[in-house]
Length: 171
Image (cartoon, rainbow, N blue to C red; front, side, top):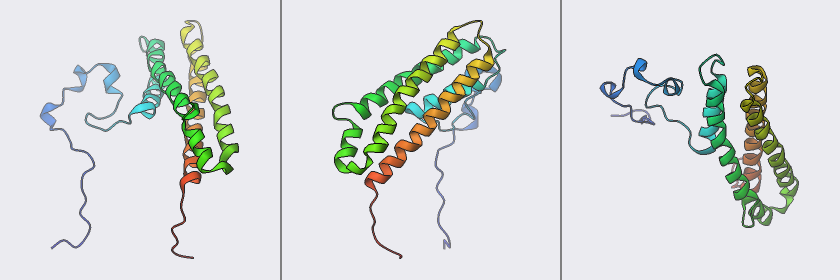
């Protein structure tokens, strides 16, 4: 007889025999966490990969190239985000149709798109300069990551405000 809730595992673990020895893995895969761990997909996964690349030691070979490599998908994902949200049939138009009271929040998010685009370019320019200090690159990348995190939170809050429903209940 079961007396409590049954806990189901959220991911299926890989058998230990299928895991290669960590020393045989390329250094890029070692920093992603334990084998079999789920990783976020899409822009969130790209941001996570960029953060890991920036956090690596600048003395590692090809550190700047790795940061640039991880920055490229972030830029592509952000461009897609802008198209999906600001496009003719985009999310912001839908939000304003559903909840016109949110026009200030939509304007704020739209202005943030310009600032984030500039931050992306700034990180790219610094990463492409061989004589730029690693601290400068880290500073600009950290600013970009913080700005994107804040933008994502604000966007999620705006969606919640638009589609929340009072279902009643306790008073």
